[in-house]
Amino acid sequence: MNPSLYRCPVCHASLAQDAQTLVCAQGHRHPVVDGLPDFVPQESLNEEQRQSIDYYDQSAAIYDDVADLSFRIQKQDEAVTRREFVKLLALQPDDRVLEIATGTGRDAVNIAEQLGADGLLCAMDLSRAMLLRCREKLADAKPAVELCVGSASSLPFADGTFDALFSFGGLNVFPDVAGALREMVRVCKPGARIVVGDESLGPWLHESEYGRILLHNSPLFRHQPPLHLLPVQARKVRLQWVVGAAYYLIDFEVGEGEPPADFDIEIPGARGGTLRTRYHGRLEGVSPETLALARKAREKSGQSMHHWLDDVVRAAALKALEDDGSSS
Image (cartoon, rainbow, N blue to C red):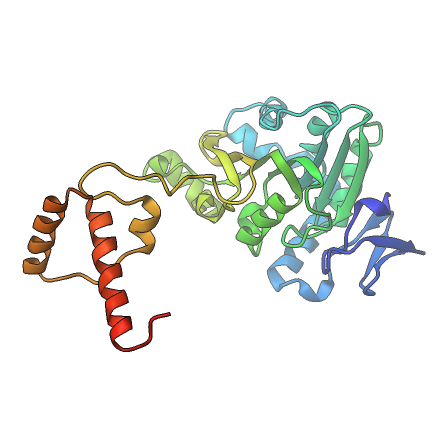
């Protein structure tokens, strides 16, 4: 375990190791159990999360025996399909990668294969038992490996730590999907690639027998891809349905802030103005008779409606302010 990699998920301060605990300067303490730092305060878990953790803790030993069932039902080779998912990250050998909801490491092993000795793979899950199984699989991995118990809603890492992030399975049941996606973007560098996916039956299949059978057997297939919850920093967003169109994958690149745009370019034509003035400069409507007069006056002036209105309204406003002595 490398304590310097982690940050307190409460205050984002750096952490130091104190016996079997990681502690920040503000006194937030995070236990280390079985060599795995645990960043999930038990009091923050809701009942559904507790039940989910109990389920995965109890089933960790046999999870891999049935984990390929979804792929076999769809007549797909799980190993090949998962490797294709990981390829979307376009990894370089020295990349630093975070996987969220890693489970027993069925995708983590594929990620590790793409990294070299200078790379780093951090794998996180809510279930300690699942992570212990993952650790066994990654024992001989080429890159450095860090595993921790944590919540996607409050990631224990500094801003801009990772070159790539992967999470397949689990996103549908995160208690705060929008918050989790914001956190994913926060801990990634600009230019990093993020790949997320989970159950979602393609909407064109809902009324087919194929679709009705899947929807009958699991309500998770009714989830829709959370495109509307992506942060504004998402760039080059792609959505695809995979594994028999029963799952979705969203991959995107992390940008900085909102997309760049020049909203001050003058728009040619009678109306004129810019996208910014058309949005911020809206005024109350006028009567049809006044509008007709304004159009005639605008045409006579040879100006665009934007410039004519801006001059007329400005002059009228300044005169009204001068008349009552409030002009500055």
